[in-house]
Image (tube, rainbow, N blue to C red; front, side):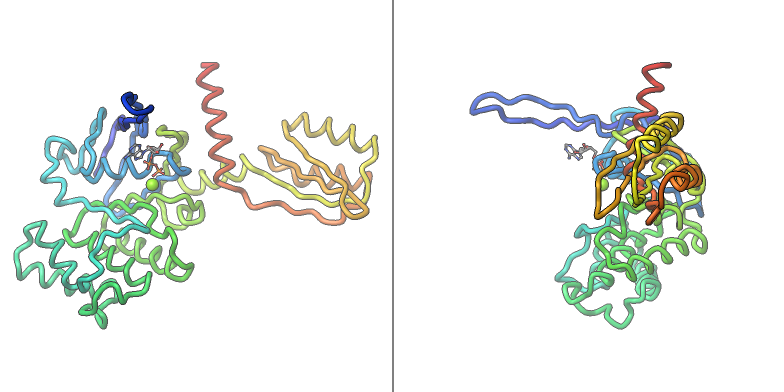
Length: 332
Ligand SMILES: Nc1ncnc2c1ncn2[C@@H]1O[C@H](COP(=O)(O)OP(=O)(O)O)[C@@H](O)[C@H]1O
Ligand SMILES: [Mg+2]
């Protein structure tokens, strides 16, 4: 079990102000994050760009030392036992070069395996197994630069598994991949947890990916956790935060306008209207599902030409959740 408590990390960056002066700026990337990863489970870390996902993963991978907080990995201490922990964790980053393009798949894995002092025979067996597992057997002795994007990504996975880690941290692994390759990778991630018993932390900003794969999800924003729960719970909250409707209708009388605005006030929702080819187009944003009420009210007064409920957007939900959290803190 991996248990992190109150992890914090600041970056100090120097900014030049003219020739002789420079000022020091502190960026609070992670402001206190708790999370737990159980073997065999996939945990999601969800957040917008700059939320602190990569920084969190770098701390858990021992690449960055936390400023505050603690983390125990199977009873070992992340900072004091960093050397031992390196052998039981690993990370895979999407869209980044973490393999050598001039070397073959086999050579890459030999190189990374040696960094872990894996005995020669065992390393050879492990490499053969991994190359088979990620489906690169036919091409294992070709330089990586000849590989397709999907093959390079699969090699990254093999590299991330070379030390047979108990915990694997995957930082936006499907970023920039074509849909079919991303789908394969998701299947693969699932089998790592379900069949090989790895504890996996997966960061993403795709709610669908998190819904499909994760057993439990943390949402972070500006270095802080704003929510946690099962993917079902998260998806329903996201959906509830961001109901959006696009309605086209024939007319918008004064009477309808006043009833419509009264109704929206009672459900704390907003709207935007504009005239559009012979009728009106309305956009409604609501924190509640008001589809039935909207249709009932509008159709009493006018003819509805079209009605569309938009897909809930994670971005909108995170913004709403952050606002709610800030409001609660002020009024606590
Ligand atoms: N090496 C760095 N130096 C200074 N600031 C950084 C560095 N890396 C990340 N940051 C800042 O820390 C915050 C969190 O970044 P990051 O952990 O990369 O977020 P995410 O992976 O969720 O996009 C952002 O404001 C980012 O600009
Ligand atoms: Mg990142």
